Amino acid sequence: MKKKILCFTVAVLCILAVGSLGMTRVHAEVGVTDDTIKFGSFQDMSGPGAYLGKQCTSALAVWKDWVNDDLGGIHGRKVDFVVEDNKYDPVLTKTAFTKLVNQHQVFAIISVYGSTPCTAILEDIKREKIPVFPTAATTQNMFDPPNRYLFWYACSDEDNGIMMLDYIIKDMKVKKPKIGVCYIDDEWGKSALKGVEIGCKKYGLKYAAAAFKRTSKNLNPQAMKLKAKGVTHCFYAGYAPVYAALLQEANKIGWKPLFFGDYVTVDPRSFMAGELTHGQYHFFNLGMRHERVPGWINMEKLFTKKLGEEAAKEPLSWRLMPLLWTPLLFLTQALNDCGQDLTREKLITALENIKDFDTGGLGKIQYAPGIRKGTHEYRVLQCDFSKKDFFPVTGWRQPSIVWGSKERPAQK
Image (cartoon, rainbow, N blue to C red; front, side, top):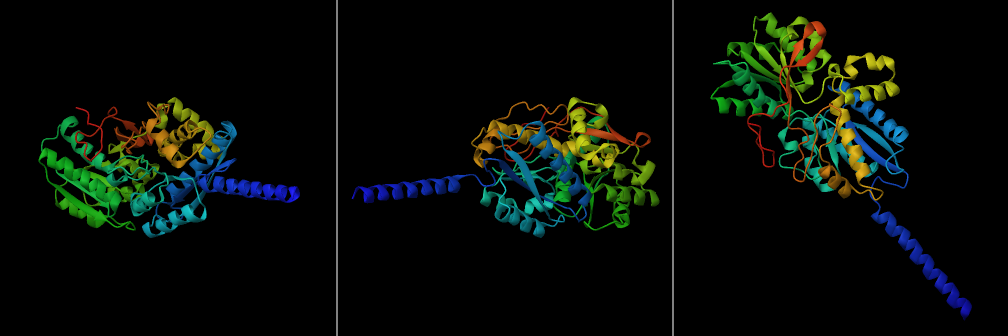
């Protein structure tokens, strides 16, 4: 009888133990084990922005080595990541997102880019309640209204469209500018169009607009249209090689406006247009390499260690790196702030509560409860073709109109 009772007791204890382990697995956070944290990313690895996708992947590789080797992991856990190719296509982005969430079962999705791809998965992010970190995605809907699980960090084309008007009227003191906007015909470009529209409305000006398809390489029709409208100051939103093509077409037809390129044109590919780039203006929310701030110097060391001296000499590998690296620095601190018991919800709380984060001059970044717009201040740069570089002509500033449901007040 005693033997039966003992066997029964052991059986019950085994069932309880197994059940307890099962409960532990059920309640363990997705993508987190005792030893690892698995992250995911979708990138354009073979489409029109493949050069950016490869830079993002390089930045993730450097971050992985830095966290695992130099920092010893996150509370003893090593970080790893998996990448899905979305070709900058919104439909393929939804497929990539589904694979990362369901097949790869990642903890969070990081270092993704593209306004059109990111817009395609906004509702999916809310449904899955998975933290997502876009870098280069310019549209207002990335952060307005705020999505609890999406932490945006880039240069807003809505803000920059307004800032262009501010700079032309207040800094350059142009009395009657003829405003134009040439933009890629998707969510990215439409955000630039919206900013110009808002700025022109404030200053009582009209504007002319010319859109181009994502696959366009010849911008002669757009240049002809804007020239016919008498445009003297033109905002451009799109990839740098196409920007260079626009400058060349403008020169061919004798149209000589001042151009204001969005942050993606702060790229050596713009120099494909040669001396036509000289004196043109650009918007940027990042520190410049030539400024030699501590954050840049440290980033160079890490990237050179991982990618080699030759990669460090290549300007295409560096221009936008702070855009990719700064959010990873912020994420690393938040992960550490969560402690050993890492969950997605704890990560969100940690991200919201980091104060006065020091990037070493790479660029300002800050979130708060109800605020998912990581950057609010920008500088106007001017291109110096002789030095093949871009130099600030203003300090950090905000647009004169800050619009949206949950935004900080604009500077006076």
